[in-house]
Image (tube, rainbow over all chains, first blue to last red; front, top):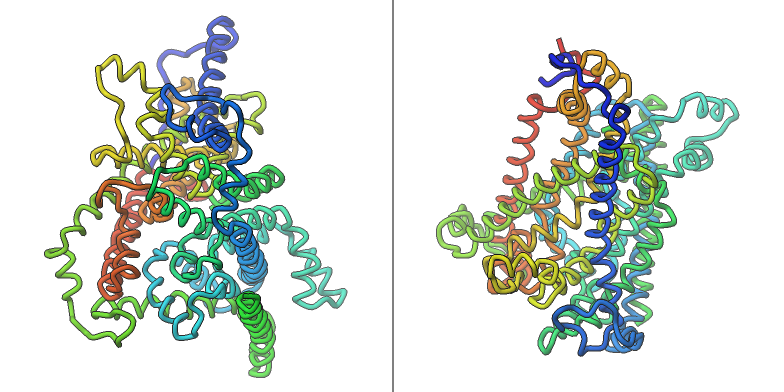
Length: 300
Length: 329
């Protein structure tokens, strides 16, 4: 096992180069910032390209060398692509499914996490390990029996499989993250509430949830993202085009378009529209989001 | 048309209400049976997960095992065929081996490469960089972009007149090569997916690893400095061991996610079957060819592969993962 005790002292003591050699240090810092900026460029150029392409006239799509800025910018791409398929309805369906699934998911994940974090009962640790191990279960494996179940319940081609199932704790990782947060809260707070005569639900709802608000926000963003982008569920359960969410509409669009010439400017316009709510949400909640996201990897 | 939405709303409210009532009911029943208050409340609180586990995990899990030994097209009841599906997969199906090879190669190359890249970037960002918050946000962005948008975007950038080839232009001129057509070239599908995959994950991993780096106590470095350790020595003997649990987490989750690549493949056209991931293959067998039994068998093979990979990482972990709380001697 690698441990710090194995650290071997170096024979020669290297002097602190940052102070003794200011030029070298300056060069090092410069190189470092250069690399960081380069990395950021690699990340950002595709984003720029998506936006630029979404405003291009068709003639400028595949020219070489590439046309960096659309000339002139063509906002009509958005209107035309939006009108080519019932994207308004797709958007409504996406919002509908996302909101329902998110509410149920956050409610059940947090209440289950609270139970695991605060109550002692037989088999608790075993059950928690089982919960964690379900994260590794490939979704595709249970997909077919689930499909058969929804078919028996006559819910194929409805929004129900994508929303109602969220009442049964969808994301084990959300439970895990929230539990980690609940564990950091001192027990005295609840004990005081118990003395005041609060019941379990009141403690959970009025005391614990507000205390883990950062984590809840982070998970809210993740849940929003997962449901907004959910492709597999709608692909399998929905067959009527008017019931499609944005992502499935986009795929349908891409399939029909590639029959002729790939109209990438339309595709990029719709992809940008689909990504915008998530990007905005990410910017608004990024502080909590990154904190919540990293806690699993670091404290876990 | 409105009834589509009302139907689901009714389902939703009914199931939600039943769930809450059963939680209250379970608590009441357990208390009546004389179960300790804390135990009763605990079980009631985790009831949604217990029900979910039984209905959406364990039940379907067992069912899919059974289905994998049957021939089933969903319209007629399944007929038991023994190991036929598995035999067909390994001996008869021309698509199985290429698909498996492609899926494994993608995961095995993509994940370690992404991990090393993320580790180097995180290390770079951990050197008292100005405006860290902004860099972190920028690096995380690709993980926020919907997979569908990522796939469409890279499909666009990878066309032979796309910007990837533009940036590679000088290099291609140097070695006298024509501009590759990436996703449309059977031999370049895998590298294309890997490059796209790296762009997608390395930022998110960087952010997680950076948090891990920030969590390493300063005094460990001070102690190493006192011992006369140089920068590289400190990195290898303090940073890496202290970061190993985080590396472990990123490796496991990355493996699981990579092996299950699905959505992106629906937005990218590749020649023939050259870009088919296992999960896409399973989907096609099940829902396009109505071979539900065969698809279940494929799903089980996939599960075994996932387990094997996870086990491999777990088994190897004592050799390289260092947990601070553990006694070391």
